[in-house]
Image (tube, rainbow, N blue to C red; front, top):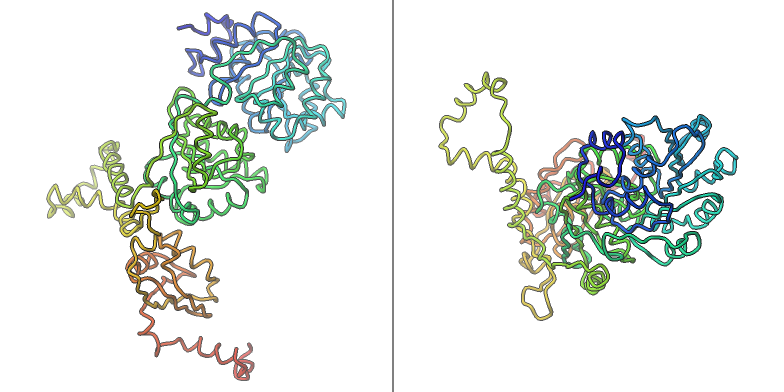
Length: 565
């Protein structure tokens, strides 16, 4: 097994990477660094996201800079602001014990005047997004005639984002370049054309076959009906306690809707999409990087440049159109030698798409049943027990309180005490999933392949009264979402809803009455708790205020007018 020293990295740079905790080079680093250090050949490096590409080009790039020359000697192009900043920071960290290289990151959304001043101060390496670099070139603040080495980082992503014309212009402007180093996770035709037009006999170095996924990633998929996708997502998340996941949606609207519902249901989650202001985007990404968010729901475009090495799961809330996009998504997990899981939630008509991805990426997909309510509760219970077992105890700090704690619990046996501690969090999941229906889709003819309503419903309905109405900002659509998405009541089990100003009546299948009563009792609207009664018991108790409004709406509004309405 080789070391960075074996690859030819200079001693001052070795100190920098050792301080960062790097000791053994990754496969892509072993392939690229020796060639990049000793020749001016063009290089095409194919490697997945998270395999150490930045060090693969960054270390030889730094080592080949002339520290006495204060002009731009190297240029790194990145698809997004976030990746641009990350790469620039990495280069600075690698060279912490080396020459004081001048590395400048230029990207949109920041002061262009400040960036111009930094470049004029003597930038030797510029890390840039294509759009901002074009602006600086138009202002004649950047000249590329002395650039010797040019790196295209995540070239496929830049082309997917529509930067082809900008890349063509930039490459043509670096007319005295010695070499181009192109790094890409995939090799679509557009990237191949860039190589054919601007590179001479490039060395193609690959850590795997084109479009092949990381071997450290397990690929799983679940099949459900379109209307059950959100319920399936929640079960997958709940069945994996401690999950730290990136959830991909196809559109901005879907991203917003899923994120809003997950937040409303109490998950540590947020959204990342194109409508966010840059400050909000930075805030969300920072929270996710720091582990303050458990789930990040994002579009493909918005997630570009997000570099987090310890993501445990990637969840596809529906499959992307392009197989290359799936490769990029799944590559967000299983990074830096870790293992990861890529999960896809699909409807039956997209199951064949899984087979296509398998053939192209050489990944093996396992079809798994969507966890039942009891299975979710089981996983949560064991997670709770493990947390209790591994919980750190601050003996000195807690000791003064133990006397009263012993006194409070003295009448409980060891077995009863364990049950009660385990039940503190377990009861919440048990309450939610106790009557959860089976939402798997089975082969035709399978007796289990029934509609969610048939799985737990009685076929008879009960009419209930709720003390919330239009004046509380409630709509029928919102109420149905509350019942179906939050409480897990199938849409087929929800009947007619009569919504009034101060209250409502609604029909619900008898099999879900207890679930609805228990679930809604935990919610408050406008500071008061939701109360449910049988509608038959409320006929003679219609609120006086609401009877008043009903009369007014029918036209007898004189009294109402006198009261200032």
